[in-house]
Amino acid sequence: MTTPNVHNWLEQHSDYLYRFALARLRDPHLAEDVVQETFLAAIKSPSFAEQSAPRTWLTGILKHKIIDVMRKNVREIAASDLLDDEDANVDDFFDDAGKWTDKPLKWDMPENALEQKQFLGILQGCMDKLPAKSAQIFMLRDVQETDNEEICKELNISPTNAWVMLYRARLGLRKCLEINWLGH
Amino acid sequence: MLSCKKASQIISQSLERKLTIGERFNLKLHLLVCKYCKHFSQQIHSISVALKLTARTIENDDTVKMPSSAKQRITDLIAANSAQS
Image 1 (cartoon, one colour):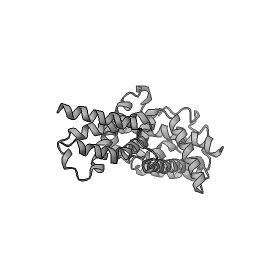
Image 2 (cartoon, chains in turn green, yellow):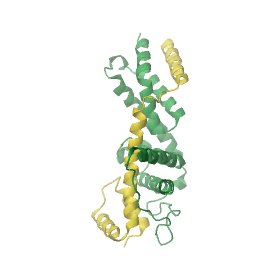
Image 3 (cartoon, each protein chain N blue to C red):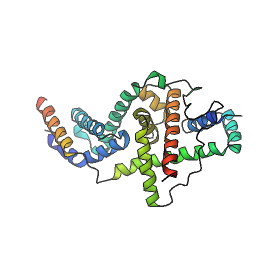
């Protein structure tokens, strides 16, 4: 009875939901999967027929599906990746005295649309080089705008672990961008 | 005096949590004399802004469509699930 309705939804909202997922998971196959799960969860929901703002409702379901994927991935992080606060395992970036091995330079930020496009392109490339899992916690924090407490709850990690992962992701991204952006 | 390693860690955490008074003080002191950590701070803010912008761009890019094979698969799955119930 409700089937025709869901086909309209698929027609009208699947592309948007797919892009929403792609922007966060950065993997076309994972994005397809979470959209699929979202629709399957939607048709099983008792409140399915009452939705007056389907896009908002579906996006809400999708967000949870995205977090589920991230949680699964983060859980697989080797314990060695999660060291304590004092030793964040960032020896690649600092010498024994705690000084930068590659000193952060002053960046000329993009000044026009073309440069901005280049910058974002390089950033994408650098994100792709990050270990997938740290890229994901990064997306959760900086793109999903989930607050820190919620990330930790959702991913079942301690705040310290989250800080360490974000810190290392930022160090890696920064270095990659500096090499590729300043050299562009 | 904070090392750059410690200072950059605090800078990164300042995006996640409120720093303590002691941390803020020590960080300020370090940043007065260390341009590299200042650059680091500017850079991670820029990265944060750029990532948000990228996500918005993908989200609003109408030319990006879900592959029709995936849509077909979902349609079939919905049909199969409806038939069961």
